[in-house]
Length: 344
Image 1 (cartoon, rainbow, N blue to C red):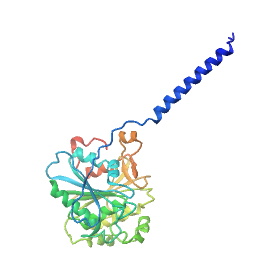
Image 2 (image 1 turned 180 degrees about the horizontal axis):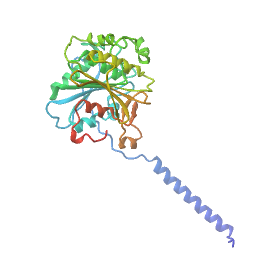
Image 3 (image 1 turned 135 degrees about the vertical axis):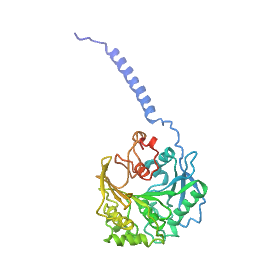
Image 4 (image 1 turned 120 degrees about the vertical axis):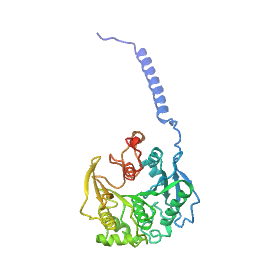
């Protein structure tokens, strides 16, 4: 049965519907456009403005957890190009690890006056040798931390991404007496370039050198003759910015420096990724290599729920299902056993 309604009644109903739609649209716009009240993020890093002559004109930022214990470890962190110290800390989770496990951090940050892309100048001879430039500035930051806090001189480490990874190579070569170990992520071997013109070719393909020639570059960087730092190398197999062949050159360099056979290593799987380890005569691991299959240029992270909710882990922070920061902290003995299962 069909019901017939007067036209006036239909028009009245239509006008009521239109008004309802208008009100609903206004409400929805308010809900969409009204800014959400969010608490501003608390700045985890503190800048230190006086730490020596600072010939490299770098910024020094630190993170010191509450109630830092005596003889605490220290990790020096070097960001990549187009990044800041705070960017790298937010994506890598280093300050969260430092708070949880009780060690201090110092971040060196590049100045745009030095490099417009915020890259460390690992390729400039003045910045990549002992006693001058950016390398000395980073060394002075370590000295300042030791004077200000109770830092264990035997547990100081350095890590970095890309240009920061190449600068980590510089620090391990030029100040081997300072560092117990280093983590080089998507970086280059020490001496890969000695000027701006060589940078791009070195990133695409390292120079053809024997292991001894690579090793001689490290040995000639200082007068030190004692035990060398351990080295952890991380690289994505699909890195189109810094070719994975640089990881192979790093292996040749540091196996020669440590006097171990490059062809003799143990291979295991960690979180589904290949890990190779080279040991010295005492059976201690002195070099390790993580090859992240299919990963491009960046730092491998295991993205947390908070980062997923926020929409990402930051530029050049690549979710590979494994946290390079956590694995480095574990290999350096910085992770307390009772909390080692926490994710970062």
